[in-house]
Image (cartoon, rainbow, N blue to C red; front, side, top):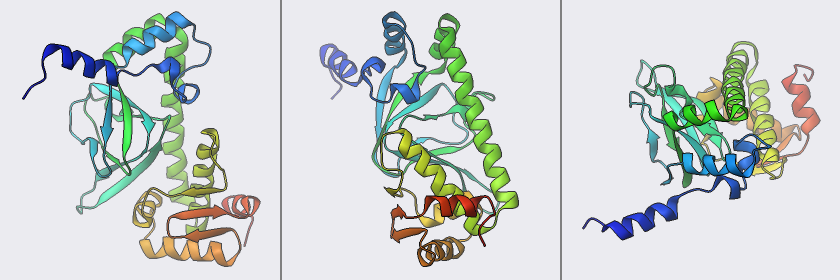
Length: 247
């Protein structure tokens, strides 16, 4: 039975997101906005959306109308390649944006899938464009976010083109470590939300190769690995491996 007007309004108020009160605002939004500008940002966020593990936030080919700020949880993006397999193109966590792939063509070019129960803030792109014209620091910040995505894509291409398997995995773990640190979590101990097969897809490695690389890290005292639980034991050692300095 559809909700009546008053309960529908109440539901909307419940899911409204106050950017000014969000503990991710320093990661997600530009610093230094005044109260009036933050109030406008609050109004820009249309709603929150909750997803269960395995749910799609959007599909490739779907019309683009919003970008999504991850409030909690973890996602992967992937594309379907010619042989029918899913190619993982990225992993995204709280404080990062999803949906930027649709800006150019006004259609999403990849799928976004929740790797655990997650919540996103829905930001209609037309609202963001309008507000960016009013708040120049928001426009500048959004350009920085897009630039960061481009740099990350180039980094992955370099990773796949020049590095051996263990170097790729070391780079991947150190990148995750840095991102967890920025969110106030331990840089050395965390749980992987993705499977080894998904890591392999992202890094251009077979599942067996990923497993062998993890085993090598354990043997060399670089990391302790227990299923999806990772404890980095030797960060400098991983960095040396990443920069081809370790044999």
